[in-house]
Image 1 (cartoon, rainbow, N blue to C red):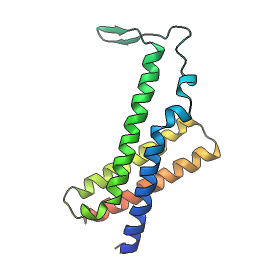
Image 2: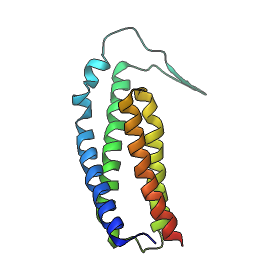
Image 3: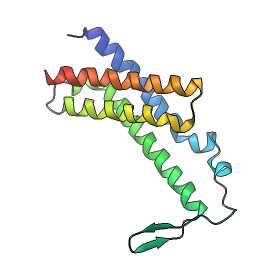
Length: 146
Protein backbone atom coordinates (compact mmCIF):
# COMPACT_ATOMS: atom_id res chain seq x y z
CA UNK A 1 0.00 0.00 0.00
CA UNK A 2 1.20 3.52 -0.77
CA UNK A 3 1.38 5.84 2.27
CA UNK A 4 -1.25 8.59 2.43
CA UNK A 5 1.44 11.26 2.34
CA UNK A 6 2.58 10.02 -1.09
CA UNK A 7 -1.00 10.25 -2.36
CA UNK A 8 -1.66 13.70 -0.90
CA UNK A 9 1.67 15.26 -1.87
CA UNK A 10 1.93 13.41 -5.18
CA UNK A 11 -1.50 14.35 -6.46
CA UNK A 12 -1.03 17.86 -5.08
CA UNK A 13 2.19 18.34 -7.04
CA UNK A 14 0.71 16.72 -10.15
CA UNK A 15 -2.42 18.85 -9.92
CA UNK A 16 -0.70 22.20 -9.39
CA UNK A 17 1.85 21.47 -12.14
CA UNK A 18 -0.81 20.32 -14.60
CA UNK A 19 -3.16 23.26 -14.00
CA UNK A 20 -0.22 25.66 -14.39
CA UNK A 21 0.93 23.90 -17.57
CA UNK A 22 -2.59 24.02 -18.96
CA UNK A 23 -2.88 27.75 -18.26
CA UNK A 24 0.50 28.43 -19.89
CA UNK A 25 -0.60 26.36 -22.89
CA UNK A 26 -3.44 28.78 -23.56
CA UNK A 27 -0.72 31.36 -24.31
CA UNK A 28 1.44 29.02 -26.45
CA UNK A 29 0.18 30.34 -29.80
CA UNK A 30 1.55 33.75 -28.84
CA UNK A 31 4.62 32.48 -26.94
CA UNK A 32 5.68 30.22 -29.82
CA UNK A 33 4.67 32.72 -32.52
CA UNK A 34 2.20 30.50 -34.36
CA UNK A 35 1.41 33.39 -36.73
CA UNK A 36 5.05 33.77 -37.71
CA UNK A 37 5.62 30.02 -37.91
CA UNK A 38 2.57 29.44 -40.10
CA UNK A 39 2.42 32.39 -42.49
CA UNK A 40 -0.73 33.07 -44.48
CA UNK A 41 1.22 34.01 -47.60
CA UNK A 42 3.19 31.51 -49.63
CA UNK A 43 2.92 28.64 -52.03
CA UNK A 44 -0.42 26.84 -52.09
CA UNK A 45 -0.63 23.75 -49.92
CA UNK A 46 -1.52 20.37 -51.33
CA UNK A 47 -5.22 19.60 -50.96
CA UNK A 48 -6.67 17.22 -48.43
CA UNK A 49 -7.97 14.30 -50.47
CA UNK A 50 -10.44 11.87 -48.94
CA UNK A 51 -12.66 9.34 -50.71
CA UNK A 52 -15.16 11.46 -52.65
CA UNK A 53 -13.93 14.76 -51.21
CA UNK A 54 -11.12 17.12 -52.11
CA UNK A 55 -10.57 20.11 -49.86
CA UNK A 56 -8.14 22.84 -50.86
CA UNK A 57 -6.24 23.39 -47.64
CA UNK A 58 -5.28 26.97 -46.86
CA UNK A 59 -2.53 28.16 -44.56
CA UNK A 60 -5.21 29.67 -42.33
CA UNK A 61 -6.68 26.15 -41.98
CA UNK A 62 -3.34 24.83 -40.72
CA UNK A 63 -2.96 27.76 -38.33
CA UNK A 64 -6.54 27.24 -37.15
CA UNK A 65 -5.99 23.51 -36.54
CA UNK A 66 -2.84 24.29 -34.53
CA UNK A 67 -4.82 26.78 -32.42
CA UNK A 68 -7.75 24.37 -31.95
CA UNK A 69 -5.51 21.48 -30.92
CA UNK A 70 -3.48 23.70 -28.57
CA UNK A 71 -6.59 24.97 -26.81
CA UNK A 72 -8.06 21.46 -26.60
CA UNK A 73 -4.83 20.29 -24.94
CA UNK A 74 -4.94 23.31 -22.62
CA UNK A 75 -8.48 22.45 -21.55
CA UNK A 76 -7.56 18.79 -21.02
CA UNK A 77 -4.51 19.71 -18.94
CA UNK A 78 -6.50 22.04 -16.68
CA UNK A 79 -9.18 19.35 -16.29
CA UNK A 80 -6.63 16.66 -15.38
CA UNK A 81 -4.99 19.06 -12.92
CA UNK A 82 -8.29 19.87 -11.21
CA UNK A 83 -9.12 16.14 -11.04
CA UNK A 84 -5.74 15.53 -9.39
CA UNK A 85 -6.37 18.29 -6.86
CA UNK A 86 -9.80 16.81 -6.06
CA UNK A 87 -8.64 13.17 -6.05
CA UNK A 88 -9.84 12.49 -2.50
CA UNK A 89 -13.41 13.12 -3.66
CA UNK A 90 -13.37 10.42 -6.34
CA UNK A 91 -10.47 8.01 -5.70
CA UNK A 92 -12.75 5.39 -4.11
CA UNK A 93 -15.43 5.63 -6.80
CA UNK A 94 -15.96 2.68 -9.13
CA UNK A 95 -14.75 4.66 -12.15
CA UNK A 96 -11.47 5.71 -10.47
CA UNK A 97 -9.24 2.97 -11.90
CA UNK A 98 -10.46 3.67 -15.43
CA UNK A 99 -9.98 7.42 -15.07
CA UNK A 100 -6.51 7.00 -13.58
CA UNK A 101 -5.45 4.66 -16.37
CA UNK A 102 -6.91 7.06 -18.96
CA UNK A 103 -4.91 9.92 -17.42
CA UNK A 104 -1.79 7.72 -17.35
CA UNK A 105 -2.18 6.82 -21.03
CA UNK A 106 -2.72 10.52 -21.84
CA UNK A 107 0.61 11.36 -20.15
CA UNK A 108 2.35 8.44 -21.91
CA UNK A 109 1.01 9.68 -25.26
CA UNK A 110 2.21 13.19 -24.45
CA UNK A 111 5.65 11.84 -23.49
CA UNK A 112 5.94 9.79 -26.68
CA UNK A 113 4.98 12.71 -28.90
CA UNK A 114 7.66 14.95 -27.36
CA UNK A 115 9.95 13.51 -30.05
CA UNK A 116 8.11 15.71 -32.56
CA UNK A 117 9.76 18.67 -30.82
CA UNK A 118 13.23 17.20 -31.31
CA UNK A 119 15.77 15.10 -29.46
CA UNK A 120 17.58 17.74 -27.44
CA UNK A 121 18.39 17.07 -23.81
CA UNK A 122 15.43 19.20 -22.76
CA UNK A 123 13.08 17.14 -24.94
CA UNK A 124 14.26 13.95 -23.24
CA UNK A 125 13.83 15.54 -19.81
CA UNK A 126 10.30 16.70 -20.68
CA UNK A 127 9.42 13.25 -22.02
CA UNK A 128 10.83 11.66 -18.85
CA UNK A 129 8.79 13.99 -16.65
CA UNK A 130 5.59 13.24 -18.53
CA UNK A 131 6.37 9.51 -18.32
CA UNK A 132 6.79 9.88 -14.55
CA UNK A 133 3.36 11.56 -14.36
CA UNK A 134 1.92 8.63 -16.31
CA UNK A 135 3.57 6.07 -14.05
CA UNK A 136 2.29 7.86 -10.94
CA UNK A 137 -1.29 7.79 -12.22
CA UNK A 138 -0.93 4.21 -13.46
CA UNK A 139 0.29 3.06 -10.04
CA UNK A 140 -2.78 4.51 -8.37
CA UNK A 141 -5.00 3.11 -11.12
CA UNK A 142 -3.65 -0.39 -10.50
CA UNK A 143 -4.07 0.06 -6.74
CA UNK A 144 -7.65 1.28 -7.21
CA UNK A 145 -8.44 -2.00 -9.00
CA UNK A 146 -7.22 -4.08 -6.09
